[in-house]
Amino acid sequence: MHGTGGSGPATARSTRTGRDRPAPGRRLAGRLGGLSTLAVAALIGGCATYHALPLPRRAHLAGAVSALRTEVPALAPGAAPRSIAVNRPLRPSDVGLLAVLNDPALRAESGYLAGAQASLLQASLLPNPVAGVVYEPQLGGAGVAPSWTATLAEDVKSIITYHTRVEAAHDTFEQVNADLLWREWQTAQQARVLAVYLYWGRDSLRASRRETQLLDREARAAHAAAASGSLDMRALAPILAAKASADQTLANLTLSQLRAWQALDALLGLAPNVHFSIAAPRAAALPRHLAPLLASLSDRRPDLVALKMGYHSADENVRTAIIGQFPALVLGAQWDQDNGNVRNGGPTAQFDLPIFDRNQGQIAAARATRLVLHAQYQARLDAAVGTVRALAVQIRRLRHAVRQAHRAALAARQLARSAQRAYARGDLDERSLADYLTAALARRLEADTLERTLGQARIAITLELGLGLPQVRIVPAAQI
Image 1: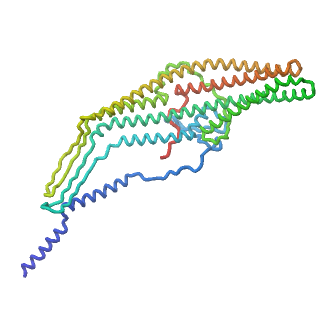
Image 2 (image 1 turned 180 degrees about the horizontal axis):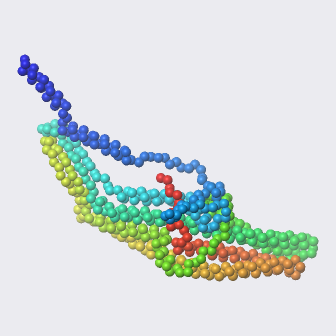
Image 3 (image 1 turned 90 degrees about the horizontal axis):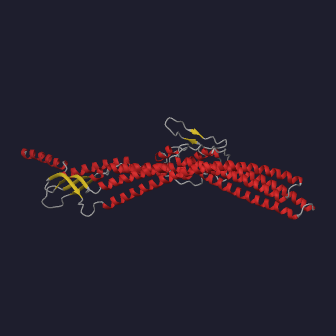
């Protein structure tokens, strides 16, 4: 009884110990389950979350210049931001900055930089190691344990090409940034050209209205004289013809001004009926020596910088493609256990046999892209230098033509006034008076047209030389 009783508890303890200690397979499954839970928790903690970005339901057009963004950020280290004073006549240069700050198209394009930054971030990340687990519980047979296999591997080729891929992505990011800066410059130039056009167009409109009113008074006086019989009806025709021509000129100028205002309002994000006062354009002096400026043009103009960055990116892609001709290599390790509870472990390697594909296609494509960008850069540089030299010649000739046109307009105006006095005395007929008045208006409009052309040429040469505009982007960043 005692022996039997003593053996009972011992057997019971032995049995409980066997039930409390999990089998090797269950221990592995429990560990894997715990690791999986930790991995899932880590992944969830590092994941991005969704935030809605609803579309606007109405247009955001400003109803006045005072409602625009006017704060120009600091353009250099240590410099202070400045605010454009919109409560006084705006210079064309300030109109250009306002266009850069408020143009809806530029704000939309700024999102491309966020895309390039995301591509750079993606290129800077190495591929994740690949892990695998196979667990096979024993269902029957002579085995004593379940079998399992665990593997861990990493793509070595992606590590070898990491540097060149990141350099290519960084150059692409800089290319996009320079392209956007060039787009800002072009928008500023377009706004400044429109401001110059509107300023001299306003001057032409005033002259045209003045001449039209004068011809209208002369036409009414001639009508009254013809009605009273003191003037032959045939003498009335030249005055009426001149008035019709002046009316047509005034209508064309008014329509051109309206279209220019609408185009400028669109660049500024304003409602299409908003007008403001534009100050007289300041004549920027033409640089005396163009050779030093042309020599450093490729370091100053954003479009040339963008092409240069694109070429560097393509060159890095050529390097990546050449490295990629070597066999792909995946290194790792493997651990396993069979049904006989025999465990093994060791390194693993997988690689391609470069028999058919040695990355010839990728190398050829990368070299062709680099060659195209090389040619595009040379063509753009040649065009920029040629345009600057051509504009310099045009500006010199336009300045001489403007001086002559103003002298001719002043002389024609004086002759028109003398003709009016002679006509009032009866010393000049209606046809001659109409010719003098028409010639005076034509000379004035010609002078204004040359002034406008000269101002636009001066704006163009500053853009071509990469002068007078911010060297950094000032468009507010897009929200993503």
